[in-house]
Amino acid sequence: MSYPGFPGYSGYPGGDPSAYPPAGQQAYPGGQYPPGGAYPPAAGGGYPPAGGFPAPGGFPGAMPSYPGAPGYGAPGQAPGYGAPPGAPGYGAPQGVPGYGGPGYGAPPGGYGAPAAGGYGAPAAGGFGAPPGGAPGYGGYQQPSAQSYGGGGPGQMPGQMPGQAPGGYPSGPAPGQQPVVSAQQQPFAAAMTATQGTIRPAANFDALADAEKLRKAMKGFGTDEQAIIDVVANRSNDQRQKIKAAFKTAYGKDLIKDLKSELSGHVEELIIALFMPQTYYDAYSIYHAMKGAGTKEGVLIEILCSRTNSEIRNIVACYKSEFGRDIEKDIRSDTSGHFERLLVSMCQGNRDENQNVNMQIVEQDAQRLYQAGEGKLGTDESSFNLVLASRSFPHLRAVSEAYCRISKRDLISAIGREFSGHIEDGLKAILQCAINRPAYFAERLYKSMKGAGTKDSTLIRVVVTRSEIDLVQIKQAFVQMYQKSLASMIQGDTSGDYRKMLLAITGQ
Image: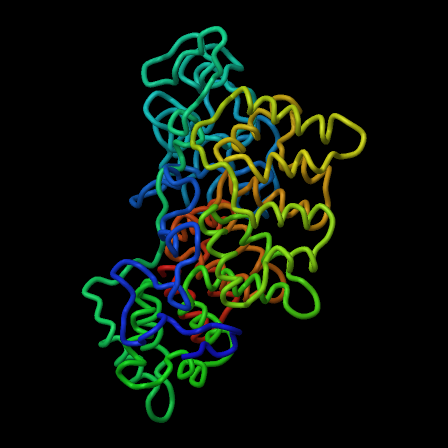
């Protein structure tokens, strides 16, 4: 079968349409797996593997955010970027208890300690901190002894002369390099699990769902609600099985039937949901560079936020389904330092070691300072090297170390040294390293704020994160903008398109 409107797409699943993909696994378009690993990555495979956000059941207090992210905003006040050192954490929307502790520039004694009446903040040690008092990483002043559970002011984990109960290890012996595991880092405390709003349906029956969709589209008119009820409550893997069952039972292509019955943004949304995840990313990149003009924001969002295995699968899919080399297309559609950054990203070779060497962290922080604020002009290649190759836990630590050197957060420094698409790309990498859900929450907010709605961005983020971390993105959205994602969707969309978006986001 063919997939209408997408060059080279040879059908899904490959081969006999009556054959479903193996249980718990999606078949790769064309029936083959790309080199370098199984396709597709697990839905929860967001970086880092051991990271993420707290498990379901309540977010522990105010969520940490990256420097320069929209502030938490007082009631009635538009979210700002960053907060001055020593500023208290900003309150919740009107009528809701304050979110608790100080934000950026928290005073010595502990980052993110909850304020009276704080919103679900832990008793001590900051947001999502483990027993012993590890800090949340919202503040960027010098750490204190209390906030790190031992040692003196200014000492980082792995450099402390002693260790308080439940705190971090003592410093290394002379001649040893300080190495801090991801579990020992203060950042990791708030990054423990991710959760999508869509999960596989229990007692799934592909043929029964295919019959429901056929009935919804048969005859005069279309029962859009019946389509929404099925599509929004099945995982991507289950949707592929429904598509195969539909062709087996009726000898017709489900996608063609849906396109003939739907139109506009709701059609775009439902067709996106029926695309395998890696194919959808490759398709989005292909159309971002196809024809006149380039949608640089799409390239940044996908290539700067995906894991190594996801990027390698996207590159392989791009080649097999569109017959093109993604690196060549990037080189022909972009230029300068932005081109080099994207080429670096599409290699999928970022270090994914969860251990952080604090000596290299300090060296990288110094390297970035000397490449930017510490000299006249900017050494762009040093920023590319560090941000494109270092692990995300390492970049979080570099961001902290840079603050101590420069007295300015690294995202702000990037904004001063760069402009245009290269600035956006470097910031996206660092934002994803520090707080990935907050990055996507900002993407969603910007897609809907002001006049008009950037529907393709809204659709792409909701679809691609729906089985990974959309629960955490919704939490970040509330804490950053004092309004729910659902309320903003409600005000910016309408009709079946609105119903489908709300169903996917779990409203």
